[in-house]
Length: 118
Image 1 (cartoon, one colour):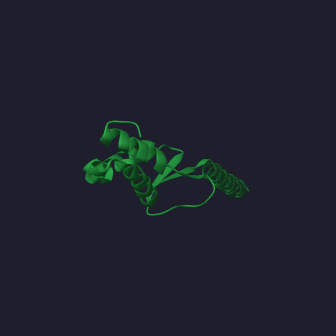
Image 2: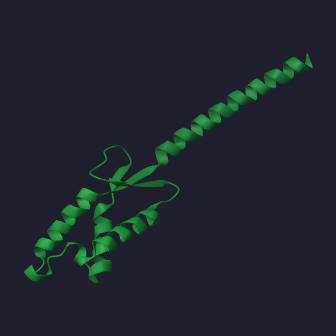
Image 3: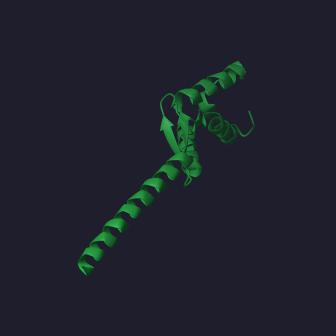
């Protein structure tokens, strides 16, 4: 009889643990924020910035595209937190708890490379 009680206690423990993991997964999923850095959006913002420049200074990322890529990767790592997933994407992502970080990333890049706020 004590073996049956032990088995029942084990089954109840497994069921309660399963519900706890399931509920915890749902809670984490609802609190997860997704930010994306879009190549297309950054290039569009850079195109707008270049159009405003005088004709002699029209260079993509102030002539430093490799440095801009390094900044994007560094900013992506800085933005990663326990509740935020940051993705580097080609175009756009749709969904709940999803936002674009491309504008703020482009602003940081132009501040670093251009030495001014644009």
